[in-house]
Each structure stands twice: as structure tokens, then as C-alpha cells.
Image 1 (tube, rainbow, N blue to C red):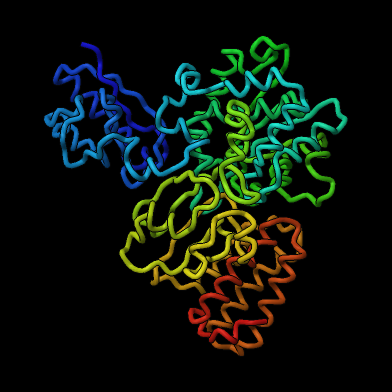
Image 2: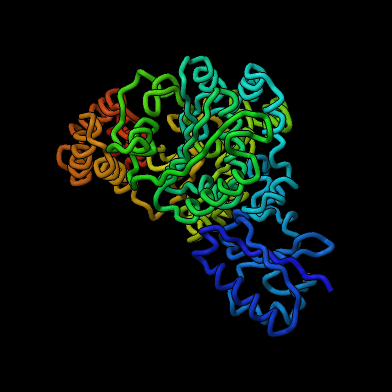
Length: 518
């Protein structure tokens, strides 16, 4: 009798909820009962409210059970788990679960399907096809594929990837670099971590294609220090890819070279800014550089450098494997392709939802998220991390695309969505935005370093009723200075959550709507 394949995730979220203990219980109970099982530690499907999610391979497909604890294992085995038997924790065929079936999984197509560190699994699910095609194309043709796809930076700035790559490709230098910004520090974001833990070869393949496009021979992945499992999986994946010829001095026998290394981040939020990250990789204090010159021309160690985030690079293999038009035809307007939206905060079904641009916040909050976890009405949604605006219900039907959100004074950012119910106090959240900026500022520029500290004081005076009209005017002036005078997005975007909270929720500041205007 052949062994039955059972999947238990190795993702950090699943581990935090007891996946290792569940795996150990399965092995122990199967051995005790003389049952033949093959345990695969896959990536997470992104349905975190069901973690640890156990899947069993059957003739019908994978059958999902969750959330499963070690104490549930005997009962599941008694209920004929190995044949997909009926049980209170059974959710049916995993792929048919609405949360997954209604997504457009392009970048995350393999997530949860494969063993993240199996080269054979990766190759069996379209892995390396993009790299193989890239090796057959000229530099111009390769750059045109990325440009025509419409791929824009998924780290938040949304700058067209193809234009950035063309700039580096056209620069004259003996050494060029490819750097992945994996210092994912925004609240409510986890797609980068999921990728590095659940499909690390995809990131390696995307960075290698970028190196071929721009003429780089060395790459670095800058991973935040709070991600030990991502650091371990990427380090192991690089070693496996190198041994198999997908990295190194002779890529797939082509004579082309690309070396890749992991760098552990410095534990500073501002090092998520690309120039501060480059300073950190060079062994210096993570301080923002003045621009110009741009990193594309004067980047790591003063050389031309492609800097993109994890999801940007991870989107590239599919574009090369299936063609630019395939990717471009997803999305709306100038926002092409898909984005992994991350539902967090006070949400019933938190997790990852990959959808083409154009879906609305309301669809994400209720169609996928199921409303608030508390059961209370949702009041405010912060989109795009701690520097993102608070979006009120009147804007929840605006399509999620870069330009549409700029038009309402918000930003899609990295796709992080943090939900707050009607018990939230937006004045406290606005105050926290300033306090966070003051804590994390690198200190190089005055608007960010001093403005954030003064901002905390101004909000305190407003909420205490200390001449609020004058303080509101002062707050607007302060935000204007930070917005236009800061060296980077930390100081430049902190006004977004502050002003959106003030504009849409004046009652939380003890103000009327009219009194919040500058």
C-alpha cells in the first residue's frame, strides 16, 4: 500500500499556531496505527483563520481540514482522514473553497501546492520556464517583455519596472547589482514573507532574469531580521539553486553568471527605504541618501543597481513564461496584473487574497474577509501600511488601482489592509502615526525628525481642546512641510494617515467637520 501524502504548512503563521506540533502528532499517531503517510511541509494557502490547515491527497484532489490541533489528530484518523473522510473540520476540496476559487493567483499560483525547497516540485509547476526563455532573448527583447507587461514596483512607489531596468541596462559600468528589498516592515503586510518561505525559487528566478536584463552579475536579498524562517529558507534555496546550475558562473550552461547572497537587515524601519537599505548592505548606518543620483545609476557601492521588492521580482518569471500580454490583460487602467492583498487587523477571515487590480475594498472586506472579527461595524480601513491613509466607507467602492486611489488621497502601497471597527479612536491612531515616525526616523532631515515630534504635541493639544482651530491650522502647515520637505517616504507620507483621520473622523478629535479644514 502506497503512502498517503499529507500536507502541513511550514509558514511562520502556521508555525505560530502549532503546525510543528500538529506534524509531530500526525507522524506519531500514524506510526502507532501502522498507517503509511508521507508528510510534506508546504507553504501556506493564505487562509490564516484556518491555520494550521491540514490537507490530504485523494483521488478527488486535496481535501482540507482546519484549524487542526494535535488533539484533533486521533479523531481525524478515526474518521478516515487518509481517504478524505467526513469530519467537523473538513472543508472539502481545497481548490474549490470560495476564498481560493475566487482569486486570480498569478504570482501565488504555487503557494501551498509545493514543497518550497523541492527543485523537482518547482520545476513541475512551471518553475524556471521564465529563466529558460530569458536566456534565449536579447537584452532589448527581454526588457521589452517586462516593460510591455505593465509591471510596476509592488513595494509601494509603483514605478514601472521596465523603465527602471532599462536605465540600469543603459548605464556604463564594469559592475552592476540586483538588490531585493525584503525588509517588509509595514503593519498588516506578509506577502513578501510568504513568498520567501513558501516559494523561494520564484524570487531567485525573478532576480536572475533581472540580472540578465541589465547585465548584473551579483545580487543581494535584504531580509528583515524579524523573519528567521524566511532567512533560513532563502539561504537554503540559494544553495540548492546554485548546486543545480540555476545560479553561479554558468547559468543553465549558458556561460552567463549571477551570484546571489542573503543579507540580514538591521532591524530599522527606515532601512525599507531603498537608499537606506543600500547604506546598510554596505555596512554603514541606515541613513537615507539624497536623490539624485538615483540608485539605478549610482546605487550599491556607487554602481548601477536594480532595486525592487519581493513581489516585483516574483512577478517576472510568469511574465517571461507566458508572455507580457498574458500578464498585461489582468487589471484596470494603468494598473496591470495582480496584487496580493493582505487582510489583517479586526477582520474575521484574515489572510492573503491575490486579485487583479480593480477589485474594491468592500469586496475584500466582506466577500473575502467576512466583516470584522468583533462583529461590530467596520469604521476605518488603513490601506498601504502605517503610512497609508484611513479609507472611510464612502470610498470602499472605488476600484483598487494606483491612480484611482491617488485621486482620493490614498495609496494602494504594498497591498496591506488593516481593519478597524467602530470602537477605534482615529485621533489616537493619527497620534500613533506621528509617534511611529519620530521613533523610526533616521534623523537626517529636519521635517521628519522634528516634524513628527511636534505632530504628537499638536494632536495632543487638539484633543485636549487647547485652541483647536489654531492647532488644526498648525497641523496642516506641519503636514505640508513634511510632505514636501522630507527626504523619503517616512516623513513624506506620515501626513497621509494623519490628515485622512482628521478629515473623515473629526468627531474623534472633538471637532466638527468644518473645523478640520486648513
